[in-house]
Amino acid sequence: MTPSPTENLRIPINQSVAILVDGNNLERSIHSRCGDYGAMLNFDTLIPKLIDNRSLNRLIYFREGKQISSKLAERLHEHYHGSVRPCHKSADIPLSIKAMQLASKVDTIIILSGDSDYIELVRHLKTEGVRVEIAAIPETTSALLKEEADYFHEIVSEDWFSLPSKKSSQKRRPHRPKKTE
Image (tube, rainbow, N blue to C red; front, side, top):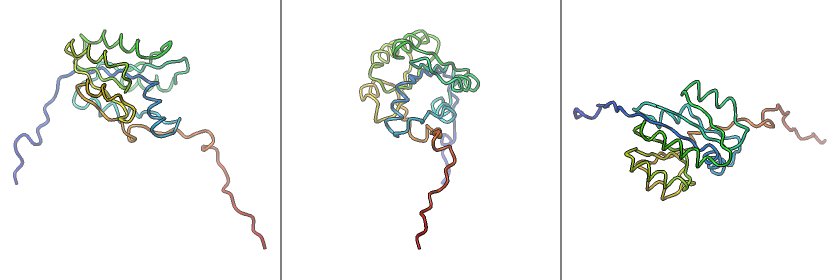
């Protein structure tokens, strides 16, 4: 059987993409899914999967609180020219404002969150002619948000990793029962 001329054809897509991450929402989703509070997104596998055949314009990780990993910020900047933005409370408002600012500068915005608070943002961006994709853990994602988006990327267990806990990284001697004679 001879392959058709289009089977192996990969057409380059000239599309500029911004990725906006609701860090707290995604972290809670991962932790509730796997029960491991040391689990983190593996951006090295996830970002290429999300971008696919397109170009990355921006990557911004929004995170509530003051304790933000400097290693994460350095890694995102070094590998993706990304940035981490601390938020006073939730990431919803700062992420939404940034998405609206970027709407005229990119073709696609990928929001990493399953939060239903973004439904109105998705609707608005689409009226502005922006393709909106959601990337999140299916079990913790609003069904309506999935429905409103142009595309839904499932974040699965292969897209995160677990950091060793301090307790498990300490060497422990194996327990051996005492011999009784």
